[in-house]
Image (cartoon, rainbow, N blue to C red; front, side):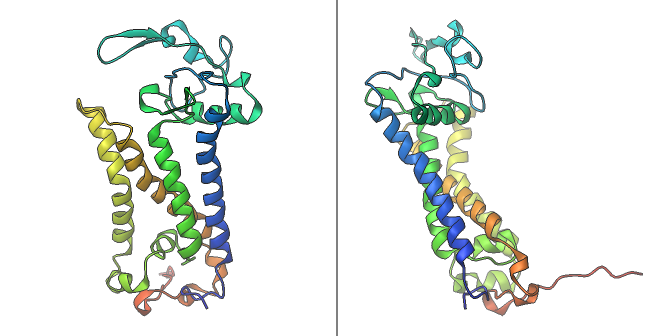
Length: 254
């Protein structure tokens, strides 16, 4: 019997493996695609997040290739003109990876690494997030347990002995939010300090702060897809730390 009272944790393993596999596919692709493309075929990029800006050079979804967008001014006041780029002109695999980066990332070249003189599909912060996402998926596949609710399934990654006081005093929500905040805090501090002050993060700090955030998102995703109350006969059958038990409150008619 598993520590949550169920006979196995195959679903948790499957969910964690899927998260790890998807994250690893993208993470490896972010490095592999620019390496395999012809040298210097991806120029410096600089566009918007949550938008397609480099689908074509002069047609639909080509905001990154407009004359104003191609003109780039550095912090020191120097100006240069970017070369146009369109991921629809690449092979299907490379095009898909750069399309994914185009949609999800700002693609700012000063915040990205180059491989084979090609800018990578995403910035260094996103690389850290996907690295953390892969770590979180792997950890969840090994240690995550369905404990009825999402927050209890998240907390299940920790040894039960560490959680005894938390469950005895019912600090579950506080602990869940606290651990989540700790994983998000490095990126939030780095990002908002950069946004609100003259501080400029660098390509060493960005992936380091993105990694714990990715771990947290992966654990939350794993718990969301693994927390299934229907696998238990009732709430009281969920085995919790410190011999705690869930009790479902029923509305009483007056």
